[in-house]
Length: 237
Image (cartoon, rainbow, N blue to C red; front, side):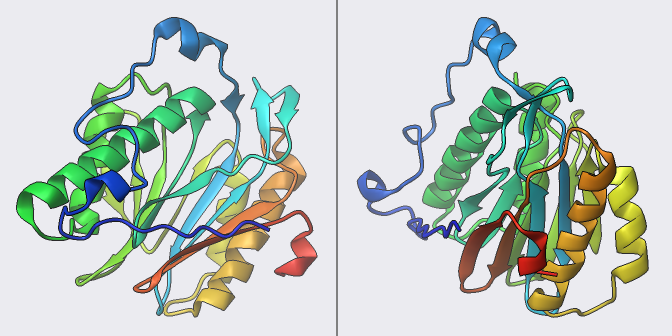
């Protein structure tokens, strides 16, 4: 089980105590050689808007080309803001660089403006990074809560940003979509959405060789982000 405790200066003060890395306004130095060596992840990631916030689910498997399981306990969802989380899809190194860059730039945005970044602006920023950065086939889901409501965005490798009530990315998406089309309902609670998302991940795991080994569930509300891992789907279904 994994629980994330994450805080970010909301007005740009006290940057030395911020958990965001790298230093404010800098981008990670990632070489082509380094990226060639990282594992690529087939995966299934799901984002669902709810009456209470957002639920994001991912599987736990990292694989080499979908043929060899290189890690069975990969956390593919990370908190990137006090009220937002992002999934990791594509090469591991590229995804980690993407997260670090997005955190730093969101921090810089809030420092300059003295106000919270909206989830829509955060999604646009993520799309700009996906289009212009050396991040290797990133296709993340961003989910968050702000004063305008509860939001889920899918971000394609070309930088396209699309908002929807629910969305799925990764190699297991075709199987997972069938499950969500059947089970999704408007205005579900977070607990109901967790069960639906876990069911979608489980269905993908049954057929997609790039997905497997359990589920991570992120719950996003106005109070923050909590992330838990479950090796046994029965714990949440």
